[in-house]
Amino acid sequence: MNIDLSKLTGFIDLSIPLRFNGPQPNAYGVPRASSSPCKAGELVGDTRQGGSCNFEQYTFIPHCNGTHTECVGHITNERISVLDCLKDAFMQALLVSVEAEDVGGDLVITGSALANVITPGAALAEGTPALQSALIVRTLPNDYGKLTAVYNSENIPAYFSTDAMEMIVAAGYKHLLVDLPSIDRLFDEGKLANHHIFWNVEQGSFAAGRESRINSTITELIYVPGNIADGEYLLNLQIAPFAADAAPSRPIIWPKSSDTGV
Ligand SMILES: [Zn+2]
Image 1 (spheres, rainbow, N blue to C red):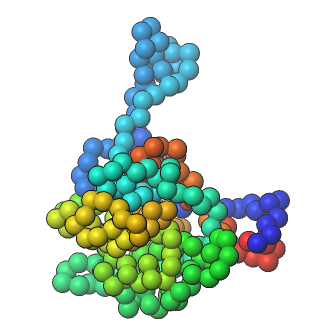
Image 2: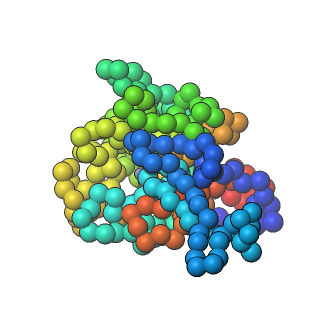
Image 3: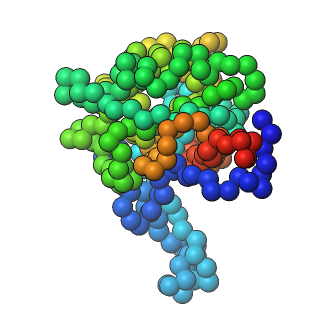
């Protein structure tokens, strides 16, 4: 890959802006992300309150308040950070759109729906980065409501079936990005079965093993604008440098074109 950086303009941002004092997405009914001016002695971090500059304290829950990237540390007793796990900055990505199916009243992304849009072994090609190391899944219908959607027991979003998740792993995708708050059912009795499949951690276990996909990440609560076509892109997955299992993130993509060399 030979990239002409001067032509790499017009990226597409897949993150949801986190508006601390405005509408924002929410999963599991947790408190809203919020901000308030810091007070340190005589100093106040708000120019409108007499401060010399603005400096605020932000309170939020990365997993529930917006776009975030997580690593295997999400399900292990050992504290493993996404900062340590994510080794890829740029990667080839495939964007697909899938419609969830009604399965017993739940919306489920099934293996058969995915089989229409991904190719077995597509991400296993030789080379650095692999031909397609990331899979970006846009669920249909897709609309701006996802930017501020409230997901809870009354509004359970779509999630992946077991065979769909196994298919993604078997195809070789190292990183998965979805516009859902979780790849598992929002309330699944804490099993997080798909997370275990994705990171190759034994079901029910809280320990990563030698075969676990320690350098793989899952990015949730992205938003893919409706005018962006399915297909191959260059992905730059940026995370805040949190030494934590998850961090707010900003995936940006560029269309593949012979013009840019992407
Ligand atoms: Zn999460």
